[in-house]
Length: 347
Image (cartoon, rainbow, N blue to C red; front, side, top):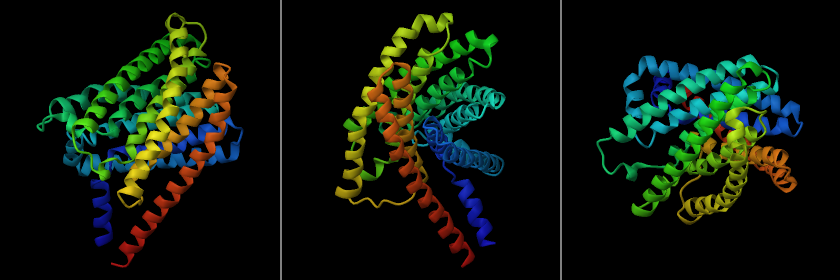
């Protein structure tokens, strides 16, 4: 059956980074919740939940039937870091679940995500970077490498979300939050250096300047959110020792994220308008929506915690940019899926 064969091929070639759909839907839902738009927020939360379940099932199918392709992805520096979208998507979903009072679900999702983050944090650098046969590996670096940072900071965000509900585990949650936040900061510095070297030392075709480069901004934005939430935690030895440092750096990171936006917009104009790369739906477009939503949430969190009204106002206004981007990419995805189904029925 041609239709079944095409479906199997779609599963075989499924990108490891498709959980960016969950990340994008979840963070925009959190932003809408922060603005008090409950109905829209719950609608996107539902989309995130359904997307998460479907993607878990598809990846399970891929693992059972196409294990060699998954192994190949783990060994590919341009694709391997996309597996970290599972960690980030799981934690974004858990954080939004806490907004509904489902703290037990948040705790379970955090446990799963933190375990996978720890394992992948050692496996992927080894399989995709240190064991790569092609040298120099820096020539293969791209924007997906920043997803490792996002995954690390998502662990911190989920941990801080639980502190008031699991008071007995406050110190452990504080340690996890500060540890993963700190790891994320150093990973950002390393990723930024490696990706910058790749751009400066090797030719960059316009096709290669793809949507995941926006994660460079999203990674800074989630660092701001995690930092602001750590700064707002109740007293614990790990938090008390780092509160002032993290709070100050969060403001600095927000400023840097703001500076990055025009750079990334200009890169998109160069890619699509100047170099005429067609703008069509690809799964990685969700890697643009997530940073836009995260920047909005970062502004709102930071503005409230550090009493910075202008930062909060910018975050609140930017939310509608993220919503518009989600709608455009969502419609494009549906159109892409429907055209694929029509094409299969015609065969």
